[in-house]
Length: 446
Ligand code: FO1
Image 1 (tube, rainbow, N blue to C red):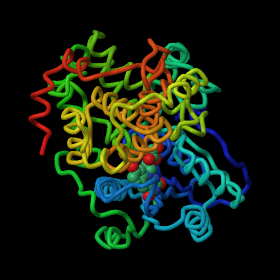
Image 2: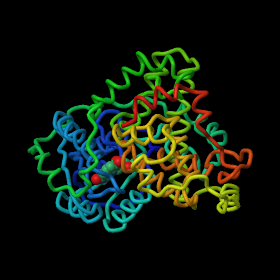
Image 3: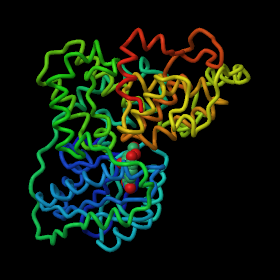
C-alpha cells in the first residue's frame, strides 16, 4: 500500500469503469516508482487493467540530441520491463495536452495518474489535462522521499530552515516499496519502433550523445554500486576535488528518474553504519535535492534573475555599474574562449562529457556572473549552457545551482566586492587550495 499522503488529487470524477493510465514523465523507471505503484494499486482495487504512456515532445526546454538519446535508450528498456509485467507501454509524440486527451478518450481511461514535477511547463500540462478531461486525475511525487507539497507549504529560505521539516517526516516516508507483480489480462504488447521515434524527433543533433555511461535503470544500479565500493569512502573529504572519483555520478540518472533517491537512501541506511560520508551524501541527496524542488515549485522565476532574494537583487543592482575586468558574450563562454584556462577547461568538460563536477559548477557559474555584462545576462547564459550540454540539464537542481551561484539563493550575504556585491565570491586561488588545478586543466583542454 502506498502512503496516500504522496498522492495529490487534481480532479475527481465518477467515470464508468475503465483502465488506469500512468502518464510517465519525470520518473522514467519501473522499479521503486510510487506513481506506477499507485496506478497498479488503483487497477487492482477497480479490477481494471493498468497502462503506461510517455508523451515525447520536440525541443523540450532546449534539450538536444545528447539528452534525448540518453532518455530514449532508457525508455526502450522501460518498455521491455513493463512488457515483462504484462503492462502495455505507449510512446506518444506531440503536444501533451491534446495527445494525452486523445489517448484518454481512445482507451476509455477511467483514472489518470502522473508523476510530480515542479517545473512550470509540467504544472501547465497537468492543469490543462485536468481542465479538459472529466476524469479522476492524481499526481504522485515519485521523485522526492518526502513529498514536495508536504515538506513545506512555502518557498524555504535556506537548507537550515528546510532540513528540520524534511528530517521530521523522513521516518514516515522512508518506507519500503511494494513488490511489482505480473499483471493479469491478455494485452497485445506491441513493441515500439525506436529508430523511427528518433527520426521523427525535432531537436539539435549537433550536440552529440555521450558514451561514458549506460542510460537506464541498470546503468544507474551499476553506477551506484561503483560509488558504494569506491567513491563513498572519500565523499566527505574529497567530494570537492574534480580530480578524484569521490562523487556518485548519479545526477543524470536522478534527473531522468532512472533511479529512485529513496532506494539510494534505503540501501545506504540499511547497509552502512552512519558516518561522515553517509551523512554528507544524504544531506545532498535528501535535503539539498528536495530543497531545489521546493524552490522551483514555489518560485515561478526559478530559471531567471527575478527569483533572487531582495538582498541579492539590491546588492547586484548596486554593483551593476562596476567596471568589469573582462566581459564575454554567450558565444565566447560557449566556445571556452575566456582568459581563464581553468574556466575554459570546465566548459570543455561540460561540452564534451555532458557533466561538470559539482564544485566546478559553482566556480563556472560565478565566473559567468563576474564576466557578463549584467547579472540578468549571467543567469540567462548559465542556464542556457547548463541546459544545452549537461545530461542533467532542465532539472530543478540545475536551476537552483545557478540561482545559488549567481543570486545567492539559499545562501547568505558575504563581504562586499566588485561586481559580486555581497554574493559569495569564488576564485581560482580558492580552487588551488582545494585541488590540483593544473592537473585538471591538462585533462580538459583542447
Ligand atoms: N518529459 C516528458 O514528459 N516528455 C519529454 O519529451 C521530455 C523530454 C526531455 C528531454 C530532456 C530532458 O532533460 C528532460 C525531458 N523531459 C521530458 C522531462 C524530464 O523527464 C524531467 O521531468 C524534467 O526535465 C525535470 O524535472
